[in-house]
Length: 381
Image (cartoon, rainbow, N blue to C red; front, side):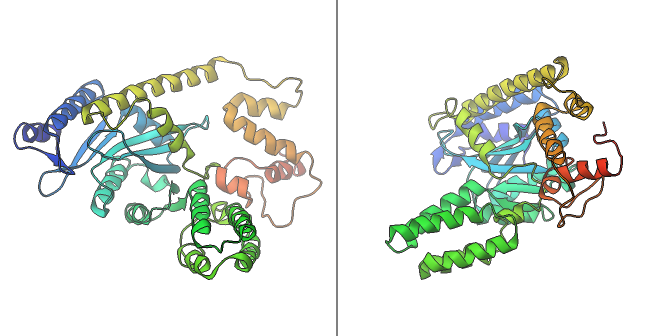
């Protein structure tokens, strides 16, 4: 790892190269932008990774606002790359968490020279070291199905569950079905239906039934691929496995994909590294402003539910953000329709084994029902 002063001196000397492109001027411009960022935000973490030949391998940035966001919501992390954001073809990696309004919040940005083992490991390790105070609270990490990326994450976050994005899994299944299935379109349609359902299973028995159904329509090459890469792997991708984890309702890297879409008008493959970073800073400042507006509205506006006389609903709405309030109110409303607790769940007034409570940590319908049954206050502020 290098300091900005070290990198500045080197940039003024020998020519730096990335993928064979001459980028000495780009490096100097980038260092100027990083220096300006450090002056405007002294608490920002800005780290430049280099290899033994003093070539840049990655540039890591976590502003003070990003650090504050992630330290407040570290449990669920999603990671994804976007491309064609600068003229030296460095992929841009976004690390995102989810805030109390249900919005994806950037925890860090990293420009990578490549996606090789060492580069990814060093970049991921830098993220973990930046957030060392909360790294043990990181419960779940969502990624696309890049085994190199997954292995590097497990090296630096061995206690976190790495989950394959549901959307990416579905897209991979579609491509492999088109590639490896027989030409019978009816079998292909059935294969797509079955694999899609596998991504949303609620129990092992449901998955097993779908697996047997898949074998009746899939070709031998597809089943070998599926068994080797999915069925027998340790990857977390099945619906019922994901329901056991803390996810706050996240199932995909769509927050990352949405963010990439917003960045595309700002970034393109003609941008210099310095200009790419400047546009990222501009976007982040706008995002900070939007977040502050949401916070202000949440504080200033008096929340209420029309035609409501239930004091529990009033309590929920008064202390929760709209995003969280909607989720909890749905569970409370469901509890009012229950005559008895369902058998499979181990329920107490403060915890439950159902998927909603396990994945979100919010009171579920079973807990609300149990509290009413025992004469306890339904919602504790």
